[in-house]
Image (cartoon, rainbow over all chains, first blue to last red; front, top):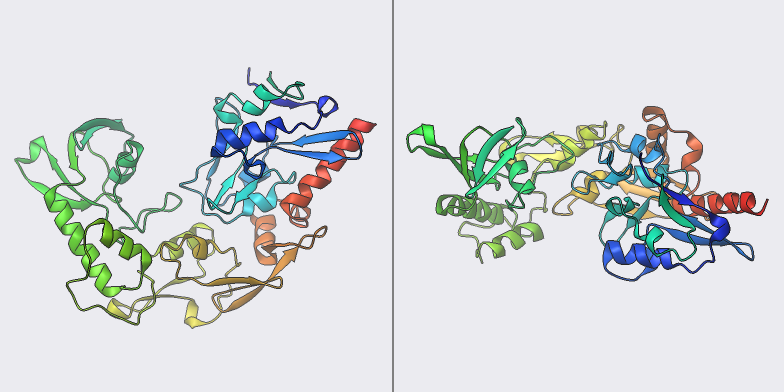
Length: 134
Length: 252
């Protein structure tokens, strides 16, 4: 059974530990701008962690002209092949949730890859807002 | 699967894989300027040459461009033999003479210990090294708006009849992937200028940020079957909008 990243926004307390865990695991800096998950404060007490949903019919995959985005069958994550990506930004523009990001320093498209099957955001989330389960 | 030897390491590769690809999978670095995984290999820069031999070839060995040479059973590849280095140095020396201003070539020359070209440098040229990557990527995007024109010393990358290309969608792939950054592109006041053509950039309906050319968005809607509303707002605003939408559900 394929595991999925579950998000339960009701439990989110807006601590942004997920952003730091993601930024640290992917870029070895603790800068939240390098994170693939963003916590948005909507109203007074509602926090919504926005993270790639690994859509079954993914707009990013459909938009990619060179098949640089493929699904990892083991983890279920849609992954970017940096060597194949031509930086046309079609996926960034196409994602209806705005969860494809572009790193202007490293000049590459970044997206959630579920940390290769062990997402650190879920591991570090103190309130189980983010859970990696079936 | 075929088994071959690269720099003494025995490796297995799928049939049809090129030697360059197989070597890179083993983290063996072979320089190549014109290579990109998104498009078919072309053998334009000649820098990826390697020495090949085989136990059955009676001691014969030869130099081939690794990006175009498919793996073979029992092939023995050397990526940095004295013969390879010497020939590669000559190629870099020639490239440096033809494109003395190109930073990428200068960097390669430094790496191979060439301080100055031993030929007469062709000063005053632009930095295009005619690797053809822009042309192949444009074709890969489904456009083919640019092409090589002319022959021999007069060969250049050009648009049809040197006019603003009709087929161009202003995606900027040629500009972003040019190894010598020789293709100018400018985004200013919501207008992208590339190949002497101006493209209107779609402004995000929420924040006003210009993010993709109208032609590129239309192309994606038409060919990749995506709804036009996906391109009305920029990625950040889309994320905020969706967060608000989810928040409304959570509150409810």
